Amino acid sequence: LVLSSQGSPMAAVALQSMETKTWSQSLLLQPGQWTILGDDAALLFRWHDSEEAIKSSSVELEKIARPRWGIRDDKVTHWFTQFSPGTGATRHDDAQVTLLAVAPKDSRQPTKILIGILSDGEEEQVTLHAGEEAKGIRFENPGLAKNIYIIDAWKNDEARVTTYDPHKDSVYSGYKSGRGIGSEHHSGGIPIRLVQVMQHALPVTQSGDTIWQREFVLDGVPQYVREGDSHFSERGGPVSFRYRRIPQGPVTAVNLTLTNQDTQEITTIYLSGTGSHRVGQWRFQLNPDNPNARRSVVLKVERVLLTPGQAVGLGLLVLVLYGWTGLRHFGRKKRVPRHGSSH
Image 1 (cartoon, helix red, strand yellow):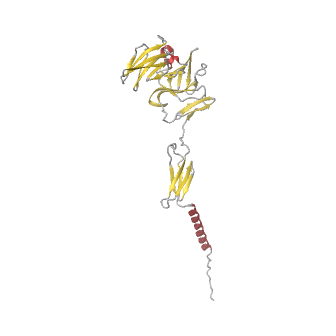
Image 2 (cartoon, rainbow, N blue to C red):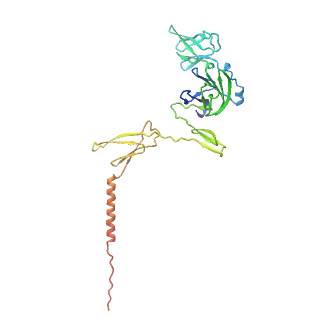
Image 3 (cartoon, rainbow, N blue to C red):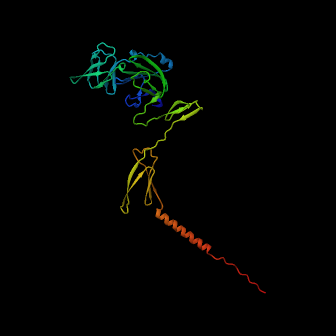
């Protein structure tokens, strides 16, 4: 997430694999929308105007984790919270989608639904369990997830996190950016980390550049600063930090084939890193500061006035001329005038 005046409230969280203990890429959460990961976890992000509003907000699962099923129609999804048989809609392709049955019957927490799709006079039936999607139909019931997290935020990078365990009461905790949540509250849960929370945020797509975050310890207290951001602390100072990365391209290597237009002689040279290669009166070198080195190379070609042999010959010639001039100068005899006398 990056800060932008045109953005909206968003949160980024990362989940840790119980097997490899590695953290996944951040999941982006939008306010009021459930993010359901099969039957393992369900996450809900909510933005509030103040901390007082959070304290008065409901955390009862029966009120906020309501099941729903939806029909994908082109780029729009029609959601239904009613599970009465006969509920449905007609898609833009004239296919009629209808809810046929629910299991358990007359339950507030359905675990399975049966959908009928009537298209061109033929009917197809689809059975979906909670968290599944097929034939453009999705069924969600976040209340059935093994791990449920409610993230309530009221300012940047700070939120109250409510975790739910089927065998324990709800747990309420406040966490700042970069700290792990969930794992210490109940056994068997999926550890999650609150990475970023912003009121005005825009997501960074996978095709964009990665935004890095660094952790440093100041007077024994961990501090976090993201790339491009500044961090101010009263500890040991006051002191201000700013994290900036200088982009560096990868080390590239190329084989360059040269053809002499006069003699048609072909020469192949190898260039890598900061090394250079000279052919005749030309010097070839790759530009090591190329930020797009993964996709292209920048070749520096420089014309040298003299070849090494010519430079040595010219140096010897200068020495000879200098020596010959010196010998002529010092070899001259100084003429002394003779004075005669007459008596």
